[in-house]
Image (cartoon, rainbow, N blue to C red; front, side):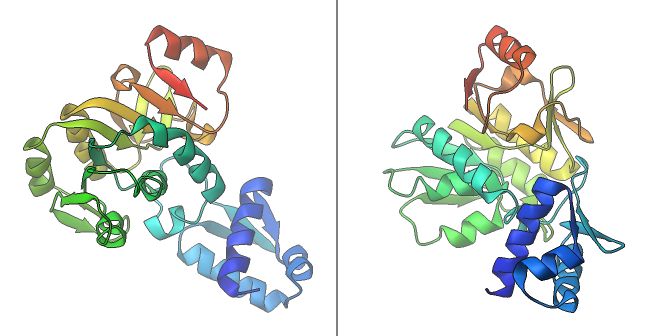
Length: 251
């Protein structure tokens, strides 16, 4: 097994169990404990886990601004599941604003066969990975945030204000019945607000761990969302509230 594959499995285990032990991982993967410690050290540097005595715990605080490289390998099955559910919301010829979230990135992977799509984004990862696709990709420009591989600031805001689009595809750090949609990072949150202003419909991609969570800064009220796509049925209070707001729930 390659080291990268082993580390991905360690992340999946940490997500399931919340804590992993060096001794257990060593036996499971049939490698030395020193090898596992190096794996955990690398994952800690990437912001994914925090090492503890004898093991490590997954970083799950709502306000943590994890780097894109870390977010991109976490919960990939869940993100892909959400992307599959959301792809039918995008029609050929649509104009889209897409945030730099890893879930939005998974959705774009499924849209490469749809004709005549225009994607306006502040995601450096999308600009790079879809440069050879048939999509019409428009960059917002702006100041680079290396941690999230995103572009932010006044230049990006000005670019977004020049366009009116069919749909905005966004994710978030938390959604709460009272506090609405929240984010951990203010510059990216401000940019997403411009996306919401310039679109006709809003598609929110949020897995079950985002429900009933409140992060640092408010992005929007729930009322601004048209479609909420998640990976499993939310609680009954959520179902009722979304129905009251005429938000289409897809899971």
